[in-house]
Amino acid sequence: MTVIDTAKITSKGQVTIPSRIRKLLHIDTGSSLAFGLSKEGVILLPCKVTVESPYTASEWAKIEKLASAKGKIYKSAKRAKKHIEAL
Image 1 (cartoon, rainbow, N blue to C red):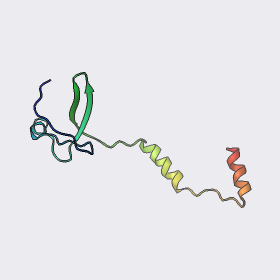
Image 2 (cartoon, rainbow, N blue to C red):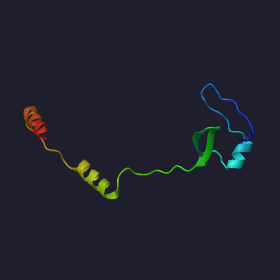
Image 3 (cartoon, rainbow, N blue to C red):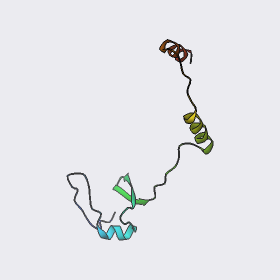
Image 4 (cartoon, one colour):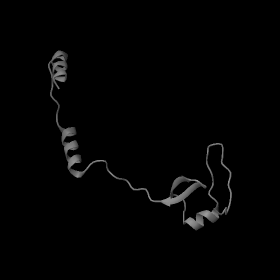
């Protein structure tokens, strides 16, 4: 591994990536980075972060339907508890 530059870590665990490295990796303000470990040390790679829904479109439709549905109303706490126990 070739050492190109060095930097110090702040008390908050932050480090400024030297400008030479930023230019080589084509990273700028707002860029995302991935960190890895190897036998030689830490690996720093530019990456893209994308948002992915944990649910499919049909699952979202079911969730929205359930969220908008009116719940059952019980006349007493005893009846509500009985219903819950039966589930």
